[in-house]
Structure formats: C-alpha cells, structure tokens
Length: 176
Image (tube, rainbow, N blue to C red; front, top):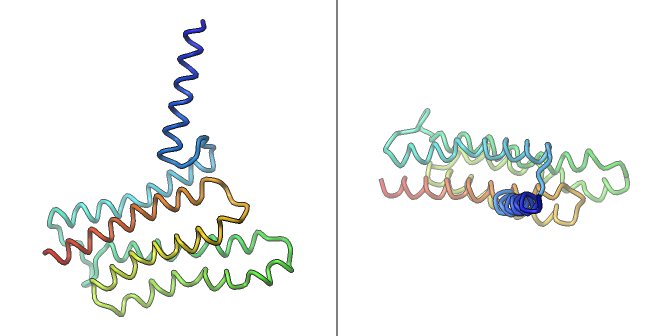
C-alpha cells in the first residue's frame, strides 16, 4: 500500500516537473491546456516551412515566401491581448490611462502590412524581429497585470520557436 502511494507521489512530482519545463506552469487546466495546444499547433507551420526550405523546396507564392505570409498573419494576432485587456477593464478612469495600449495593439498589424514594401530578406527580418519586439512589450506591460500565469511562459516559448524559424529561413535564404 505504501509502495503504491510513493510511486504515485513520484509520478505526480515528475509530471509537475515536466509541466514546469515544457509549459512553464506546474498545473495545466482546461483553458491553459487549450491555449498551449493552439499555440504549439500554430507554431507547427513555421517549423514545417523551414524544414521544407532546408530540403530545397521553393515555398513561394507570388514571389513571397509562405513563412512570411503566415508570419504576417500570426504577427497581426499579437496585438489582440492589449485590446482584450482594455475591453475587460470595468473601471473607466483606468481605461483613460491605458489608451496607449490600443495603439500598441495595432502596431503588429501595421508592421505586417508595410513589410511587404521591402525585399524578401528584409521582410523576413522585419517579421521575425517583430515577434521578439512584441514579446518584450508584452512581458513589460503584462508582468504587473492580473493575467493567467501561463500566458507569458507560453508567449516566450512560442516567440523562441517562431523567431528561430525566421532566423533559420533567413540563413537558408542567404546561403542558397
């Protein structure tokens, strides 16, 4: 009986440690689990596009790489948490002090839109570095706010994956 209990405790500790390493939190609930599944699922195309580029496939549509198209779309999503935060605040006086967050919320979309004016290498650099820029902004602005504890660790991990994919794509573009 005691042996089974010790085994269960060890499994629970191992699970918590794995969750902490992979997800940045010890306990995953339905909401955070869904967020992680959607987030990592959304990162899969970046990895696939780079792997295909590595193997010599030309992933270009209309002269523009698919990783750029997909990255521009995903980058546009990154302003949404700032708008959602403002919409969730009930105190109207506090909203007036946070109006700049609405501006921050549209910056990723504007960067994605205007990046089309540059050549392919610069576009990839602009979009890839914008993911890092938005993570820095999010980590500064949301660190002091009452948000779920899984949000910033998830944003960090996804930013590392996406920025790494853009970096690899840029290197492959330069080398080939």
